[in-house]
Length: 302
Image (cartoon, rainbow, N blue to C red):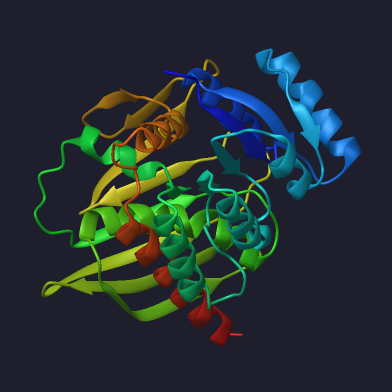
């Protein structure tokens, strides 16, 4: 079986780790897209120094799509570029893994856009999914709860500004909530904002069950960044060593897990071959719908 050829759109920041994991998954990363000739040259040099990966460099997406014979792209560009780039890549019949959020065209009208993109991907028989990788850890926790009565998550995303930090954190938080509690209706929102952090409280209702939800977001620019969560008052913490070993820690255990990004990309590659993606179409759309509601409610608080 031939190796999949992949291009990374936005190879700085998280993009360089996508390069690493696509290489680890047995793919050929052949090209990268940057915002300028200078930035893409710098990114290419970093990729070679870090991973010994040689890539062709582009700062125009149409040029990349016209000149490269690739199977898939990984979109790691700013969120406001995602939907346009997804459309362009689908026109070239490419499989697409997109960093979260899948769509961020406006503050709270992204759901229909996401629906249309998924419709196009299905018509072209191409995988379109999003990198919200944290649901991959849930099976490892051996959860026995039939009902989720409360869910809390704390994250320290990079970036500045209310909209930016929410776009960085909320899709991850939503992805775990939706995997645990399935589709539901979010009600009774309360927001607590300061210069340092944001807390979002709401009820998530489905199947005659109400889950009390708290999202706590505190921006932090430098690594490492803390991720904690609790499910029915059982607390878990993510730990990462200097050797990039990942652990989930609770009072009763310290469980080593595979890097969730590695799992996400490996599963995406598997989905191209015919297996299921990590995030289902239903989960993806529910995430966007909840993201839109949160942003709309937050905007109304101003």
